[in-house]
Image 1 (tube, rainbow, N blue to C red):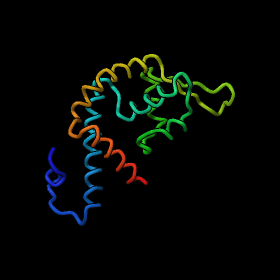
Image 2 (cartoon, one colour):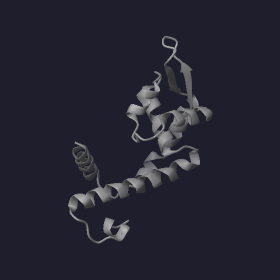
Image 3 (cartoon, helix red, strand yellow):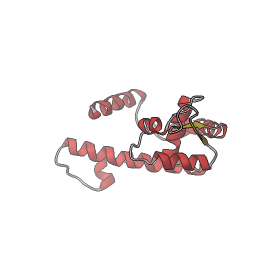
Image 4 (tube, rainbow, N blue to C red):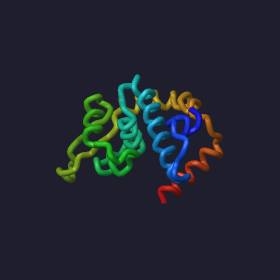
Length: 150
């Protein structure tokens, strides 16, 4: 991929902080495109994958829509729409809560769990393509990004 300067054909930045922001945004977009391509054969989007992973994490317990939204990576995603699309694919189920009729409980289905198992089997293969940094560097990068968000 090269440097950020080569990627966006810009040789100067006002300062290193501006360069970091541009680099993070560019890299996030690159990763999003990569994820779109890797999930496409499975008929789901990266945001739908995120919802499925969240629901698998709570399985066999149900979650409310607000619980899912709170845990999502992309806070701008429309969780209601994502859950409905997953329901139409029989990857999740929704039911009115027996104790609170205003609450909707959402679970991952066996079909959803099976799909995630297929994706898990390919995860190592996909991650090999992202081996441009060492395990130690990946840890450092995570720490720096956590610090950046404060």
